Image 1: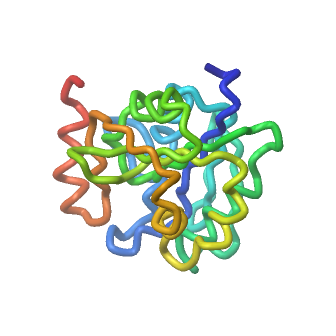
Image 2: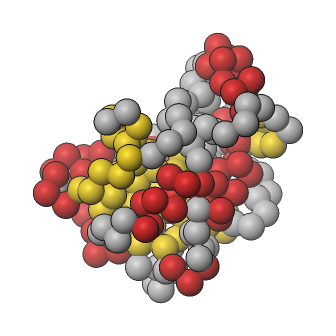
Length: 191
């Protein structure tokens, strides 16, 4: 799958203000969320994987780390920083969020296999992450990514381009200590 031409982009720059610490550094089932996210993208067929960091500076194996100096402004700046760091030979990118540990590599593979130029994972009919976007859309995605939103404005502006891809797994995210306590036991369940 390394020859797919699809890069992976993991957004992991936030400070986790409601959680009390950067989400990238959280350990669940003995693995940091940032490492789990890189593994998700790699096992899903993405190469290379770029991780956007901000509040925390960490070593990440198997990925290119990019620092977003403007991380406090929200996810939009991290998405722009990540898109700008992708190699020219990447025909598309799968964008994932560090705080969704129950998303499966099968979702990434399904997005790539869809052959779509713009694809969004759906769970129970609801659009969530990850998303796949072809290079020809990067400039517009970056221009529309502002504040604490990423690709959502682009997807809303171009519904005719979006292919929904039904996925197994759970896109629940970790924002609070309660979310962490609720999701951690589920990581130990067999898939």
